[in-house]
Length: 112
Image (cartoon, rainbow, N blue to C red; front, side, top):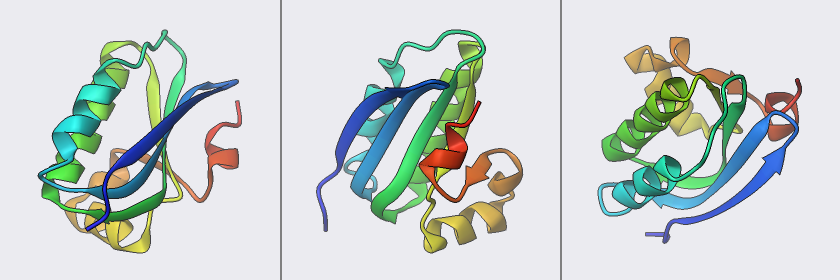
């Protein structure tokens, strides 16, 4: 089990939240709370960089959905970048790959 760690930075398109470690039932509430504090303006894009995420369970998927709701409530967009293959599979099975915009890397996700 790997502790959840995050860093936040700004890109031209809006905030980028880098996620490292496990997003599971123990850490997902922390991620949800953090995302809710990220200020977004209409037209911005919140990018969740999941390249460092090692594990994601259903609680983690719920946290991603909450992040999407936070972005949409602010009139912003959301994109997931560098999604690990196991999580991509879950998103595909649940149909959430049609709800989230997926990018292979942060560079493509932060292009205006």
